[in-house]
Amino acid sequence: MKRLLLAACLLWMVAAHADLVIVQKVESKGQSGDMTMTMKDSKSRADISPAVSMITDKDTGDMITLMHSKKLFMRIPGAATKALIEQARKATPGADSPPKLTPTGRKEKINGYDTEEYSAIFGEMKVSYWIARNYPGYADILAQMMKFQQGSLSAVTRGMAPAAEDFPGMPIRTELESAGQKTTTTLVSISQAPVDPKNFEVPADYKELPAPSFNTPAQ
Image (cartoon, rainbow, N blue to C red; front, side):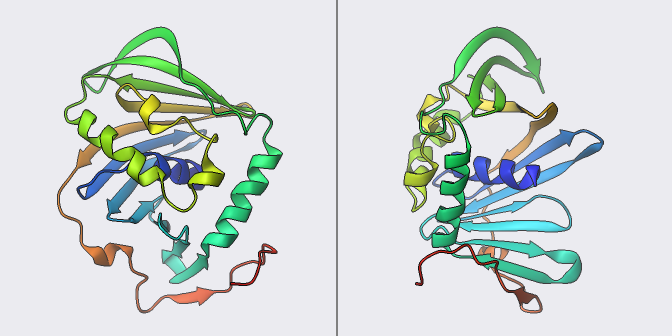
């Protein structure tokens, strides 16, 4: 669940006009593994683990979860996604106030990059971003972030994470602390090589599971 939340936040925060593939190492208590995020046009895909992937359409807000071991998938329409995020907002103290990045003064070299720590508070969660100001090409990526944030869920997600333009560089490491547990995500690589559109399609042999009812209005 934490990886799903982290993937959703990161996918909404990062985008570029070119195809983009981001590989990150995710570490939490007793667990460690890579998470790959792939982006093309309006579609994003997060391979959270070998067993689970999540596909998001920023224009519609639709989300699809692929369960590879059982060849199943579940589709949640944009209206239901908005309702879920709104419920999370109401349950999170201070969620209506946009979190601000605050420099802590701490510095560290991570994966060869000089980084500075910035912190932010989301309700009961504390997040630390170790940011590299000199990451190659980051200015171009930053210029495109706002375009992705202006998708159909922008209104309900606003205030649940710092705005893209608030980041003074590339987050190399992100540390999320909640309920006494810590999850660390470290950037491994970024590629702008062309991405096959089929990566965002549901495999033909996967069977659809009915989505739970979220008491959303009929479409």
